[in-house]
Image (cartoon, one colour):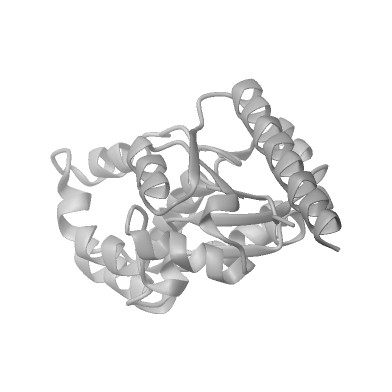
Length: 217
């Protein structure tokens, strides 16, 4: 029997994460032109997204590259995490919680070092799904096909049995190339309807396989 699986992104899907303008406010506060923080910190952001640096080093680099004292550094990082975590997509989270027992459930997220601890504290995603695969822990970001392979391996499922939900079109396309079905998140209603269609198809496929096995007995 097939093991129907749903794998979801976090930011922009399970979390509502609009831009807060925090970087622009810091640049204005420091008297810098737009884009200065990214120019100075881009290398660190990239390293943190694939786990090549730890949180301690990130904090050190923020202080050095931006010239911030300990208090300002901590305030800067607090603003970063406020935007990163956003607010919970309560409707979708409640729906996914109700899927336990109906299908396999996982998360595949491009992330930043420290995300697991903060998201678990804020949202308890570890209780929502069976496995969470973070880019900063596996050293690979979507849309690299190896990220999707890692998610399937973590759940011990076949790509063809998985529906992947993400708010970035390139990631959805990459999931399709990796053998999954993909759904571009635009709103909760369409996403829930697409998941239900996927589950119904999986149930029918499982029933056909089960029926075929009985006939051969």
